Image 1 (tube, rainbow, N blue to C red):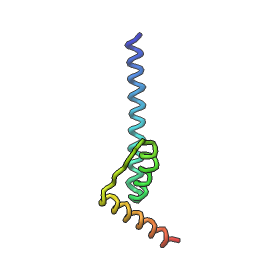
Image 2 (cartoon, helix red, strand yellow):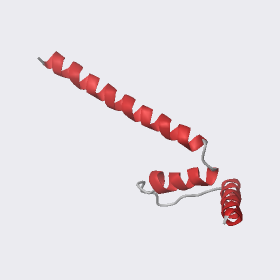
Image 3 (cartoon, one colour):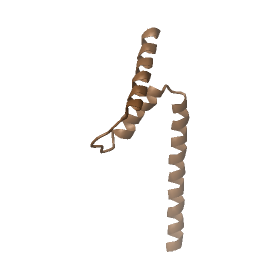
Length: 81
């Protein structure tokens, strides 16, 4: 009996893991078509929002890239309105 239950539990865990992997792959495919600033914002919103981070240090290169992409996104929005 125990062996059967262990096999069933392992199968259930494998199915859950595969489902999570498929979901992450789908998110990655969607992210490839999005502007980088949206991907970064999504990471902050979902990834870092639930994390308990006391301090987050971003280097000047990272901040420069984020600023550039944010400015591009804002300029693009202004031109289309």
